[in-house]
Amino acid sequence: MADLLLGQVLSFAGDPFVEGPGAARHITAGGVLVENGRIAAVGDGAALRAAHPAARLQDYGRSLISAGFVDAHVHYPQTAIIASWGKRLIDWLNSYTFPEEMRFADPAYAAEIAERYLDLVTANGTTTVCTYCTIHPASVEAIMAAAQGRGLRLFAGKTCMDRNAPEGLRDTAQAGYDESRALLQKWHGRDRLSYVITPRFSPTSTPEQLQALGALWREYPDCLMQTHLSEQPDEIAWVKELFPQSRDYLDTYEAQGLLREGAVYGHAIHLTAREKARLAEAGASVVHCPTSNTFIGSGLFDMGLAKQLRVGLATDTGGGSSFSMLRTMAAAYEVAQLRHQPLHPSQLWWLATQGSARALRADHLIGNIAVGMEADLVVVDLASTPAIEQATRRAEDLWQALFPTIMMGDDRAIRAVWANGRRL
Ligand code: GUN
Ligand code: ZN
Image (cartoon, rainbow, N blue to C red):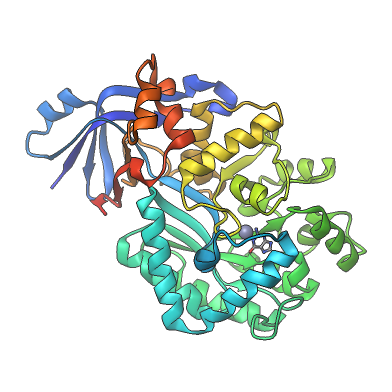
């Protein structure tokens, strides 16, 4: 049985960083026909209604129907320590993150947080995340099973660390390889789930472990590989000490076979000219995590990169201070303002949907509204609070009507979420 969603429909026919706002497609009284988990038709609402009289009608009035948000870099195990006060990256990891990740040795705790995390993100309109887990295979099992139960498309991997982490949060080069491989074989490609090879970052992996995970990636080349890159100056100096033979931070990955298409690097703030050029040449992706970069004090991402390479947008929960991609778009706007790179609402929305999907090499499946794509949708109320409603009253186009929700919206703006063609 088909469902017909009526409302304003926003989609993209191109990349607004290349083509400008004209890359967006807006239908004021539009419709999206959903059948068997896919988008079967998009167009004028009345015409679709006439053509599909048997479809179940979901009339969302003036609300905006968009592809569900795609959050390209998160740590679901950090759900409970979000908004922890007063540290910068390395101290924050040691003080808050590692003790919390230790608790995921208990599969029941992992399952509880996985469900809580997915409740929180779907309430915020996010239908796909790419998440780090912990060192414990049970942490991967928990989030994969939770996403599978909800019909979500999800990317996740066991976070490998074999040094500079406390006892209980370290594996070895061999165990990291073996456990990652077993999880990959079990979960990758099952339903809507993808396994991601996940060395945490160079400071917590020996060259041997990075090499082992590089070898695993060569065995399973269609997987993504995710890690962190050049987030804070102290971290970069530490990498220099740990890898004296490397040209730069990116080289610590490149030397072990961890740089090519399908590599997804979080943060990537303080890059050298060589690193930028190599990332572009290799077809790698970087992910902007603006609430995290301000919260942990990391720095201001260069949005100019969006013209050269695949850039995604992410909350980076729990270094990031929010589960909401609306709040994350607002932070991206503010950070770009500080760099004199004003972002258009079309660019912000694209980053949170198709841009992130493209960074994860899944833009043929999710992140846009088009016939044949998977029906992961968010319905956004553009007047969800009195403050937002009054700011949109004089709006003359979609962007003026949408921008106050980007800047001030939260989960109250999320009217409905559809995943895999089903309303959550
Ligand atoms: N670098 C290595 N691990 C982490 C993490 O968990 N969060 C952030 N923000 N940066 C990291
Ligand atoms: Zn991260």
